[in-house]
Amino acid sequence: RKEVEQDPGPFNVPEGATVAFNCTYSNSASQSFFWYRQDCRKEPKLLMSVYSSGNEDGRFTAQLNRASQYISLLIRDSKLSDSATYLCVVNSPSGNTGKLIFGQGTTLQVKP
Amino acid sequence: DAGVIQSPRHEVTEMGQEVTLRCKPISGHDYLFWYRQTMMRGLELLIYFNNNVPIDDSGMPEDRFSAKMPNASFSTLKIQPSEPRDSAVYFCASSSQKSATDTQYFGPGTRLTVL
Image 1: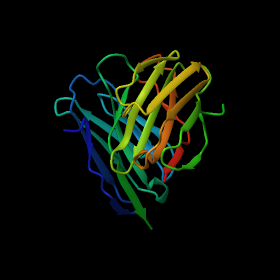
Image 2: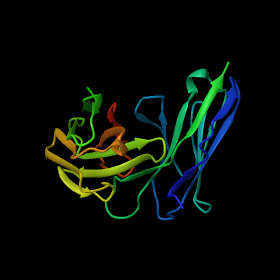
Image 3: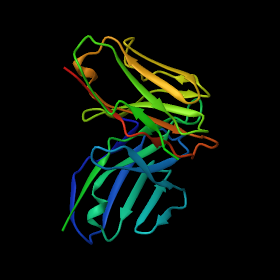
Image 4: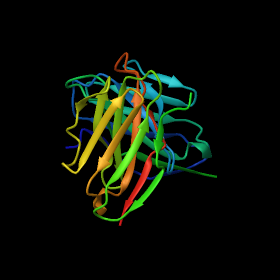
Protein backbone atom coordinates (compact mmCIF):
# COMPACT_ATOMS: atom_id res chain seq x y z
CA ARG A 1 0.00 0.00 0.00
CA LYS A 2 1.32 3.46 -0.88
CA GLU A 3 2.00 5.78 2.03
CA VAL A 4 -0.15 8.52 0.48
CA GLU A 5 -2.89 7.66 -2.00
CA GLN A 6 -4.86 9.93 -4.26
CA ASP A 7 -7.24 9.48 -7.15
CA PRO A 8 -5.15 10.62 -10.13
CA GLY A 9 -8.18 11.90 -12.05
CA PRO A 10 -8.29 13.79 -14.29
CA PHE A 11 -11.19 15.79 -12.95
CA ASN A 12 -12.73 17.81 -15.77
CA VAL A 13 -15.09 20.49 -14.46
CA PRO A 14 -16.71 23.65 -15.86
CA GLU A 15 -15.81 27.08 -14.56
CA GLY A 16 -17.73 27.91 -11.41
CA ALA A 17 -18.06 24.29 -10.30
CA THR A 18 -17.19 22.99 -6.87
CA VAL A 19 -14.74 20.11 -6.86
CA ALA A 20 -13.34 17.96 -4.04
CA PHE A 21 -10.19 15.87 -3.87
CA ASN A 22 -9.52 13.16 -1.35
CA CYS A 23 -6.37 11.59 -0.03
CA THR A 24 -5.59 8.81 2.44
CA TYR A 25 -2.36 8.21 4.31
CA SER A 26 -1.10 5.01 5.88
CA ASN A 27 0.90 6.09 8.93
CA SER A 28 -1.31 7.14 11.82
CA ALA A 29 1.68 8.80 13.51
CA SER A 30 1.96 11.50 10.82
CA GLN A 31 1.49 14.97 12.28
CA SER A 32 1.78 17.46 9.42
CA PHE A 33 -0.36 17.62 6.31
CA PHE A 34 -0.28 19.82 3.25
CA TRP A 35 -1.66 20.38 -0.21
CA TYR A 36 0.86 21.40 -2.86
CA ARG A 37 -0.02 22.58 -6.34
CA GLN A 38 2.02 21.74 -9.43
CA ASP A 39 1.41 23.42 -12.77
CA CYS A 40 2.37 21.65 -15.97
CA ARG A 41 6.15 21.46 -16.36
CA LYS A 42 6.68 23.52 -13.20
CA GLU A 43 7.81 22.80 -9.67
CA PRO A 44 5.44 21.98 -6.79
CA LYS A 45 4.43 24.91 -4.59
CA LEU A 46 2.69 24.94 -1.23
CA LEU A 47 -1.02 25.64 -1.59
CA MET A 48 -2.00 25.31 2.06
CA SER A 49 -1.31 23.45 5.26
CA VAL A 50 -4.07 21.26 6.69
CA TYR A 51 -5.00 21.67 10.34
CA SER A 52 -7.00 19.33 12.54
CA SER A 53 -9.85 21.82 12.87
CA GLY A 54 -10.03 22.36 9.14
CA ASN A 55 -8.98 25.58 7.47
CA GLU A 56 -10.05 27.83 4.67
CA ASP A 57 -8.14 30.13 2.34
CA GLY A 58 -10.47 31.99 0.03
CA ARG A 59 -12.10 29.47 -2.27
CA PHE A 60 -10.04 26.59 -0.88
CA THR A 61 -11.00 24.51 2.16
CA ALA A 62 -8.90 21.71 3.62
CA GLN A 63 -10.13 19.10 6.06
CA LEU A 64 -8.36 16.42 8.09
CA ASN A 65 -9.92 13.31 9.59
CA ARG A 66 -7.30 11.64 11.76
CA ALA A 67 -9.51 8.70 12.71
CA SER A 68 -9.95 7.75 9.07
CA GLN A 69 -6.50 9.00 8.03
CA TYR A 70 -8.15 11.06 5.34
CA ILE A 71 -7.46 14.54 3.96
CA SER A 72 -9.62 16.53 1.61
CA LEU A 73 -9.39 19.69 -0.47
CA LEU A 74 -12.49 21.54 -1.64
CA ILE A 75 -12.32 24.18 -4.36
CA ARG A 76 -15.35 26.39 -4.78
CA ASP A 77 -16.18 28.53 -7.82
CA SER A 78 -13.44 26.94 -9.94
CA LYS A 79 -11.39 29.21 -12.19
CA LEU A 80 -9.52 28.33 -15.36
CA SER A 81 -6.34 29.18 -13.46
CA ASP A 82 -7.05 26.40 -10.96
CA SER A 83 -6.13 23.84 -13.62
CA ALA A 84 -3.13 22.01 -12.20
CA THR A 85 -2.11 18.87 -10.35
CA TYR A 86 -2.81 18.87 -6.62
CA LEU A 87 -0.43 16.88 -4.45
CA CYS A 88 -1.41 15.55 -1.05
CA VAL A 89 1.61 15.66 1.27
CA VAL A 90 2.21 14.08 4.68
CA ASN A 91 5.25 14.24 6.91
CA SER A 92 7.16 11.06 7.63
CA PRO A 93 6.85 10.54 11.36
CA SER A 94 9.93 8.39 11.75
CA GLY A 95 13.35 9.81 12.47
CA ASN A 96 14.04 13.48 11.92
CA THR A 97 11.45 16.04 10.94
CA GLY A 98 11.56 17.45 7.47
CA LYS A 99 10.89 14.40 5.33
CA LEU A 100 7.67 14.71 3.36
CA ILE A 101 5.81 11.99 1.49
CA PHE A 102 4.05 13.14 -1.68
CA GLY A 103 1.00 11.53 -3.23
CA GLN A 104 0.91 10.91 -6.96
CA GLY A 105 -1.30 13.95 -7.44
CA THR A 106 -4.82 14.62 -8.71
CA THR A 107 -5.12 16.45 -12.00
CA LEU A 108 -7.79 19.13 -12.35
CA GLN A 109 -8.80 20.63 -15.66
CA VAL A 110 -11.25 23.54 -15.47
CA LYS A 111 -12.96 24.24 -18.76
CA PRO A 112 -14.74 27.39 -19.94
CA ASP B 1 15.12 36.32 -2.81
CA ALA B 2 16.19 34.33 -5.86
CA GLY B 3 14.61 31.12 -4.64
CA VAL B 4 16.17 27.71 -5.13
CA ILE B 5 18.44 27.70 -8.17
CA GLN B 6 19.11 24.57 -10.21
CA SER B 7 21.35 23.97 -13.18
CA PRO B 8 21.24 22.90 -15.86
CA ARG B 9 17.52 23.25 -16.62
CA HIS B 10 17.74 20.63 -19.34
CA GLU B 11 20.30 17.91 -19.91
CA VAL B 12 20.42 15.41 -22.74
CA THR B 13 23.13 12.80 -22.54
CA GLU B 14 23.98 9.37 -23.80
CA MET B 15 23.85 6.19 -21.79
CA GLY B 16 27.04 5.63 -19.86
CA GLN B 17 27.91 9.29 -19.46
CA GLU B 18 28.33 11.03 -16.13
CA VAL B 19 25.68 13.60 -15.24
CA THR B 20 26.03 16.26 -12.54
CA LEU B 21 23.06 18.28 -11.35
CA ARG B 22 23.57 21.37 -9.22
CA CYS B 23 21.51 23.16 -6.64
CA LYS B 24 21.78 26.37 -4.65
CA PRO B 25 19.29 26.46 -1.77
CA ILE B 26 17.64 29.56 -0.38
CA SER B 27 20.06 31.43 1.84
CA GLY B 28 19.54 30.59 5.50
CA HIS B 29 17.76 27.32 4.87
CA ASP B 30 19.36 24.40 6.65
CA TYR B 31 17.55 21.51 4.98
CA LEU B 32 18.10 20.49 1.37
CA PHE B 33 16.19 17.77 -0.48
CA TRP B 34 16.72 16.03 -3.81
CA TYR B 35 13.62 14.58 -5.51
CA ARG B 36 13.00 12.72 -8.75
CA GLN B 37 9.67 12.90 -10.59
CA THR B 38 8.42 10.55 -13.29
CA MET B 39 4.96 9.84 -14.63
CA MET B 40 5.07 6.28 -13.36
CA ARG B 41 6.41 6.84 -9.84
CA GLY B 42 5.47 10.44 -9.07
CA LEU B 43 7.68 12.54 -6.82
CA GLU B 44 10.23 10.49 -4.91
CA LEU B 45 12.63 11.73 -2.25
CA LEU B 46 16.16 10.60 -3.08
CA ILE B 47 18.20 12.11 -0.24
CA TYR B 48 18.12 15.00 2.17
CA PHE B 49 20.68 16.99 4.12
CA ASN B 50 20.52 18.94 7.36
CA ASN B 51 23.28 21.46 7.94
CA ASN B 52 25.20 19.92 5.03
CA VAL B 53 25.09 16.42 6.54
CA PRO B 54 23.21 13.63 4.70
CA ILE B 55 20.39 12.45 6.97
CA ASP B 56 18.47 9.94 4.88
CA ASP B 57 19.66 8.52 1.57
CA SER B 58 17.32 5.53 1.55
CA GLY B 59 15.66 6.82 -1.60
CA MET B 60 18.84 6.80 -3.67
CA PRO B 61 18.12 4.10 -6.24
CA GLU B 62 21.56 2.53 -6.45
CA ASP B 63 25.28 3.11 -6.23
CA ARG B 64 25.30 4.97 -9.52
CA PHE B 65 23.73 7.89 -7.67
CA SER B 66 25.65 10.07 -5.24
CA ALA B 67 25.01 13.44 -3.63
CA LYS B 68 27.20 15.92 -1.84
CA MET B 69 26.73 19.16 0.01
CA PRO B 70 30.17 20.70 0.53
CA ASN B 71 28.75 23.90 2.03
CA ALA B 72 25.48 25.53 2.97
CA SER B 73 24.96 27.12 -0.44
CA PHE B 74 25.69 24.29 -2.84
CA SER B 75 24.77 20.68 -3.49
CA THR B 76 25.32 18.24 -6.35
CA LEU B 77 23.60 15.07 -7.46
CA LYS B 78 25.73 12.88 -9.65
CA ILE B 79 24.76 9.88 -11.78
CA GLN B 80 27.60 7.74 -13.06
CA PRO B 81 27.08 5.94 -15.36
CA SER B 82 23.71 7.21 -16.53
CA GLU B 83 21.04 4.89 -17.95
CA PRO B 84 17.86 5.60 -19.98
CA ARG B 85 15.69 4.72 -16.96
CA ASP B 86 17.24 7.69 -15.13
CA SER B 87 15.34 10.03 -17.44
CA ALA B 88 13.15 12.19 -15.19
CA VAL B 89 12.80 15.66 -13.74
CA TYR B 90 15.09 16.16 -10.75
CA PHE B 91 14.02 18.75 -8.22
CA CYS B 92 15.98 20.30 -5.43
CA ALA B 93 14.10 21.84 -2.50
CA SER B 94 15.10 23.64 0.66
CA SER B 95 13.45 24.60 3.92
CA SER B 96 14.35 26.23 7.18
CA GLN B 97 12.62 23.53 9.19
CA LYS B 98 12.37 25.41 12.42
CA SER B 99 9.24 23.31 12.78
CA ALA B 100 7.83 20.31 10.97
CA THR B 101 5.34 22.57 9.24
CA ASP B 102 7.92 24.66 7.44
CA THR B 103 7.36 24.87 3.74
CA GLN B 104 9.70 23.20 1.29
CA TYR B 105 10.58 25.50 -1.59
CA PHE B 106 11.33 23.77 -4.84
CA GLY B 107 13.69 24.80 -7.59
CA PRO B 108 12.54 24.78 -11.23
CA GLY B 109 13.99 21.30 -11.77
CA THR B 110 16.42 19.72 -14.19
CA ARG B 111 14.82 17.74 -17.00
CA LEU B 112 17.19 14.86 -17.72
CA THR B 113 17.00 12.73 -20.83
CA VAL B 114 19.35 9.79 -21.18
CA LEU B 115 19.45 8.33 -24.69
